[in-house]
Image 1 (tube, rainbow, N blue to C red):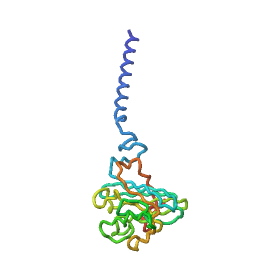
Image 2: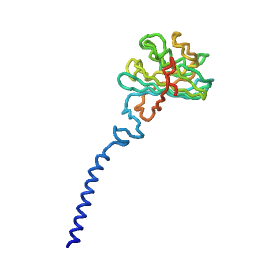
Image 3: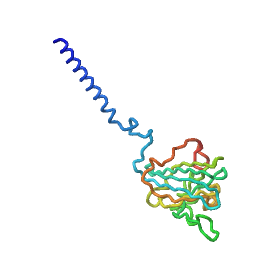
Amino acid sequence: MAPIVRLRSSTIVLLVLAAGLAFIWEPVRAQPPGGRGGRGGGGGRQEGGRASALAVLQAAPGGPQLEGSVLFYSRGGGDVQVIADVSGVAKPGLYALHVHEKGVCTIEAGGKPPFASAGNDFNPTSAPHACPDAAKRHAGDLGNVEIAADGTGHLELSTKLLALSGTGSVVDKAVILHAGADDCTTQPDGNAGAPLACGVAKAVDDTSSSRPSRRRGRTLPGTGSQQP
């Protein structure tokens, strides 16, 4: 009889251990992917459907065949984050980036400048032209994108003058990269030069998959952009 008693005792021990493991595993299994805090997919923050808009830039005819995109998304608290990336620009330097009042990027005939259909800078408060570090400026004044020797540029800033709805909405407005630097002073456009590329900001559902990674570095004077 003794061997039978030992077998039953072992079975009981195994059942107790299995129950203990199940007790430990259950809360671990219930955690969201990526660990604590609800972060998954490598720890990227989920935007949860926050309002956002994206402009895809098309190059003006006869100029460099550059490409680019400008993303606008709500950070909450009235802040809109702006992230611009361009490539294929012929020469390094500073290039003005402005939101314009009309959502049209057409090529005009009769010798008119390209994308003249976009109108003037977006300025719902009738403020003077300036750059992002000025207290009073056009809502569409995004400063300058610094283009590196390889033809690429990145700009990132936060603004309370733009929105994703209402009077200050950037949705269905043209975003233009200009051929010259914004001097932050000359009215009405900072002597920014002719348009190099244009794209209309269109509403999108979510930025969790489309938002470029944030670059950090020192802020370039008068631009609002950051240097890696």
